[in-house]
Length: 139
Image (cartoon, rainbow, N blue to C red; front, side):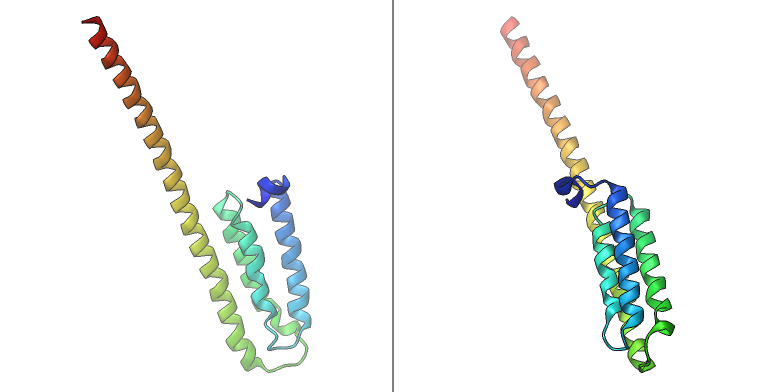
Protein backbone atom coordinates (compact mmCIF):
# COMPACT_ATOMS: atom_id res chain seq x y z
CA UNK A 1 0.00 0.00 0.00
CA UNK A 2 1.22 3.52 0.79
CA UNK A 3 3.97 2.29 3.09
CA UNK A 4 5.35 -0.09 0.48
CA UNK A 5 5.18 2.41 -2.38
CA UNK A 6 6.86 5.32 -0.59
CA UNK A 7 8.86 3.39 2.01
CA UNK A 8 7.07 5.04 4.95
CA UNK A 9 6.88 3.08 8.18
CA UNK A 10 3.89 2.73 10.45
CA UNK A 11 5.10 5.61 12.62
CA UNK A 12 5.34 7.80 9.52
CA UNK A 13 1.77 7.02 8.48
CA UNK A 14 0.54 7.60 12.03
CA UNK A 15 2.40 10.93 12.15
CA UNK A 16 0.83 11.98 8.86
CA UNK A 17 -2.60 11.03 10.21
CA UNK A 18 -2.12 13.02 13.41
CA UNK A 19 -0.87 16.08 11.52
CA UNK A 20 -3.81 15.75 9.15
CA UNK A 21 -6.24 15.47 12.08
CA UNK A 22 -4.77 18.61 13.69
CA UNK A 23 -5.06 20.53 10.41
CA UNK A 24 -8.65 19.34 9.93
CA UNK A 25 -9.49 20.45 13.47
CA UNK A 26 -8.16 23.95 12.76
CA UNK A 27 -10.15 24.13 9.53
CA UNK A 28 -13.26 22.65 11.14
CA UNK A 29 -13.14 24.94 14.17
CA UNK A 30 -12.56 28.07 12.10
CA UNK A 31 -15.28 27.58 9.50
CA UNK A 32 -18.90 28.50 10.18
CA UNK A 33 -21.60 25.89 10.61
CA UNK A 34 -22.81 24.26 7.44
CA UNK A 35 -19.48 23.92 5.62
CA UNK A 36 -18.99 20.32 6.72
CA UNK A 37 -15.30 20.39 7.61
CA UNK A 38 -16.03 17.59 10.07
CA UNK A 39 -16.42 15.17 7.15
CA UNK A 40 -12.71 15.54 6.37
CA UNK A 41 -11.85 13.42 9.43
CA UNK A 42 -12.66 10.37 7.30
CA UNK A 43 -9.41 10.90 5.33
CA UNK A 44 -6.96 10.09 8.17
CA UNK A 45 -9.11 7.11 9.10
CA UNK A 46 -8.72 5.81 5.54
CA UNK A 47 -4.96 6.31 5.78
CA UNK A 48 -4.79 4.36 9.04
CA UNK A 49 -6.52 1.40 7.44
CA UNK A 50 -3.17 0.77 5.75
CA UNK A 51 -1.58 0.08 9.15
CA UNK A 52 -1.39 -3.43 10.56
CA UNK A 53 -2.66 -2.65 14.06
CA UNK A 54 -6.44 -2.45 14.42
CA UNK A 55 -6.12 -0.55 17.69
CA UNK A 56 -4.43 2.33 15.88
CA UNK A 57 -7.38 2.61 13.51
CA UNK A 58 -9.79 2.65 16.44
CA UNK A 59 -7.64 5.23 18.24
CA UNK A 60 -7.53 7.58 15.26
CA UNK A 61 -11.29 7.20 14.77
CA UNK A 62 -11.87 7.97 18.44
CA UNK A 63 -9.68 11.09 18.25
CA UNK A 64 -11.52 12.19 15.10
CA UNK A 65 -14.87 11.63 16.83
CA UNK A 66 -13.89 13.65 19.89
CA UNK A 67 -12.48 16.50 17.81
CA UNK A 68 -15.62 16.52 15.68
CA UNK A 69 -17.58 17.28 18.82
CA UNK A 70 -14.99 19.62 20.38
CA UNK A 71 -14.87 21.89 17.31
CA UNK A 72 -18.46 23.06 17.79
CA UNK A 73 -17.83 25.73 20.46
CA UNK A 74 -14.86 27.15 18.52
CA UNK A 75 -16.81 27.74 15.29
CA UNK A 76 -17.67 31.25 14.27
CA UNK A 77 -21.30 32.10 14.82
CA UNK A 78 -23.63 29.80 13.01
CA UNK A 79 -26.75 27.83 13.53
CA UNK A 80 -26.58 24.96 15.95
CA UNK A 81 -29.27 23.04 14.06
CA UNK A 82 -26.92 22.49 11.13
CA UNK A 83 -24.27 21.10 13.51
CA UNK A 84 -26.85 18.86 15.15
CA UNK A 85 -27.43 17.37 11.72
CA UNK A 86 -23.93 17.32 10.17
CA UNK A 87 -21.82 16.22 13.14
CA UNK A 88 -23.68 12.97 13.91
CA UNK A 89 -23.63 12.08 10.21
CA UNK A 90 -19.86 12.70 10.08
CA UNK A 91 -19.31 10.59 13.20
CA UNK A 92 -21.44 7.77 11.77
CA UNK A 93 -19.45 8.02 8.53
CA UNK A 94 -16.15 7.75 10.42
CA UNK A 95 -17.27 4.60 12.22
CA UNK A 96 -18.75 3.05 9.08
CA UNK A 97 -15.37 3.48 7.37
CA UNK A 98 -13.68 1.88 10.39
CA UNK A 99 -16.02 -1.09 10.58
CA UNK A 100 -16.00 -1.79 6.83
CA UNK A 101 -12.22 -1.33 6.66
CA UNK A 102 -11.52 -3.62 9.61
CA UNK A 103 -13.93 -6.23 8.26
CA UNK A 104 -12.24 -6.10 4.86
CA UNK A 105 -8.86 -6.52 6.49
CA UNK A 106 -10.12 -9.58 8.39
CA UNK A 107 -11.37 -11.10 5.13
CA UNK A 108 -8.00 -10.44 3.49
CA UNK A 109 -6.18 -12.09 6.40
CA UNK A 110 -8.50 -15.11 6.17
CA UNK A 111 -7.87 -15.36 2.43
CA UNK A 112 -4.10 -15.20 2.96
CA UNK A 113 -4.34 -17.87 5.66
CA UNK A 114 -6.41 -20.14 3.42
CA UNK A 115 -3.99 -19.59 0.52
CA UNK A 116 -1.05 -20.61 2.74
CA UNK A 117 -2.93 -23.68 3.94
CA UNK A 118 -3.77 -24.58 0.35
CA UNK A 119 -0.14 -24.14 -0.76
CA UNK A 120 1.04 -26.32 2.16
CA UNK A 121 -1.54 -29.01 1.36
CA UNK A 122 -0.60 -28.85 -2.32
CA UNK A 123 3.08 -29.27 -1.44
CA UNK A 124 2.26 -32.27 0.77
CA UNK A 125 0.15 -33.79 -1.98
CA UNK A 126 2.90 -33.26 -4.53
CA UNK A 127 5.42 -34.88 -2.16
CA UNK A 128 3.09 -37.85 -1.64
CA UNK A 129 2.72 -38.30 -5.40
CA UNK A 130 6.48 -38.31 -5.86
CA UNK A 131 6.88 -40.85 -3.05
CA UNK A 132 4.18 -43.06 -4.59
CA UNK A 133 5.85 -42.94 -8.02
CA UNK A 134 9.22 -43.86 -6.46
CA UNK A 135 7.60 -46.76 -4.63
CA UNK A 136 6.04 -47.99 -7.89
CA UNK A 137 9.39 -47.82 -9.67
CA UNK A 138 11.01 -49.95 -6.97
CA UNK A 139 8.42 -52.71 -7.23
